[in-house]
Image (cartoon, rainbow, N blue to C red; front, side, top):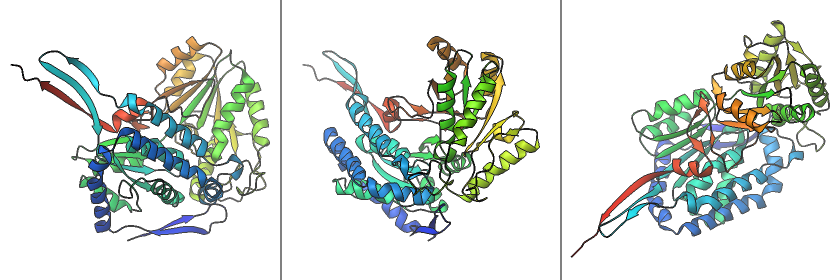
Length: 459
């Protein structure tokens, strides 16, 4: 067994510890999930929906405790109120579309044959959730997986060690059986061993590219389905006909909110040369108004990064860029301690030769480049190993769609950014991963098609 330690970014203290399960105990937990799955799937769909939504509501009832707990675990300021709004929105949407998404596909019936395709649960679904939005990313899979008739085992990131316990406690209090939804603490070797032993029928992982590769290696040869949301380097493009004020406000917020630790946060911005100086000036003014500090202080708008290790990578990328000729526009904040408390930064005179414009930063830094028009912007947006979202700013929806058709990404936004719409498939391409969550497609990934070809007895 291993002791997992959540180190609070507020002061570097140990906030929580938990012991991982032994390999034998983990196998037993997976066995209980498998044994419980047929009975759970046999319950009426409406009953499963109601139990899941009751569990979601029970999480909401804990929100006053959850918000400061999240601040202590990963540093998000309490002023933003936690994640329950998005958590609830996603679960409610998936519940609302469940009946249609899971309905049989009628292929035809006549006097001789009845034919249809049914969507049946995968079985046991393993969810490995990240720390940056620990409740919302988990519910993306937990809610539809349970509604579809799967049992779920949830393994949460060590940085947000208590989130899985909270969710399991809430769902169990609402009537979801303990073996149907389990929170587990596992080390990497035990996790890989369970996947390799085909303990799970589907694995959903949100995290780093290296983590996704480890999941694929563990699953090699097992034919276990994988859903992977990995790294990102999401771009924004501000065309010459854009509302510059709205673009600056939204894109900079998307780059800096949650200390830049957002899966679909904006990490690079391309602005038409006509508006470049204006956009940069507006962006700098916005960032200079931030207040870096203790996330438990309601006046704080920018908390520490979740770990001093993550902040060190952002500092390194920024320093390398400046040494190579980039211009840093934001003076170091007084509260920057050289550790987890990191000043936000805007860089110009950047190029794609710099890591800050290529590698995932996952912190409060963004590079801004001038472009001559759509073709140059598209080429730069596509010059990335990642492809999660792209944010296009123009007054012309048809133009946005044409640009979007050429951008290698999972989601195209027009005049907004950094938002997950549960009605749309959350997916990526290239090294961002594979598969898709939420929407009807999310249900398709959490179930498998089963065909029925029934010949009638005729006299």
